[in-house]
Length: 126
Image 1 (spheres, rainbow, N blue to C red):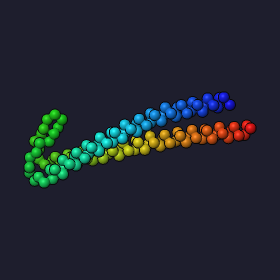
Image 2: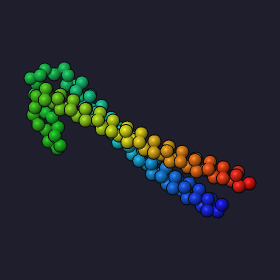
Image 3: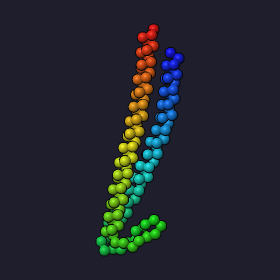
Image 4: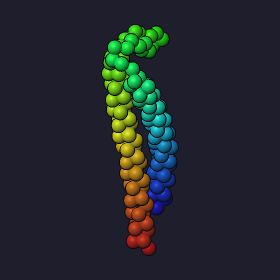
């Protein structure tokens, strides 16, 4: 009986540690997702702002710490590619978040089963 209590105590401790780690990971994923969404929104606003320009207009495109002279069409294509990259990143982050939430729920269910087995074992012992 004491061994079973130790087993439950160990399982609860592991679950608490795992829950804290998983919660931190989920919060980090949420922050990354927000950053990617902000970047995507910036690309959309830039595309919207340049939509009134004619195709032969020359514009400067930011590349790292410098600017390159290019035409509007190339810049729009680059913005669309960046938006698609952001969409894929958001989708990947959401999948990771769902996986973490599912694994946490599975562990909680496993712990519930362990407690239920403990209760059943106590009742049959009496």
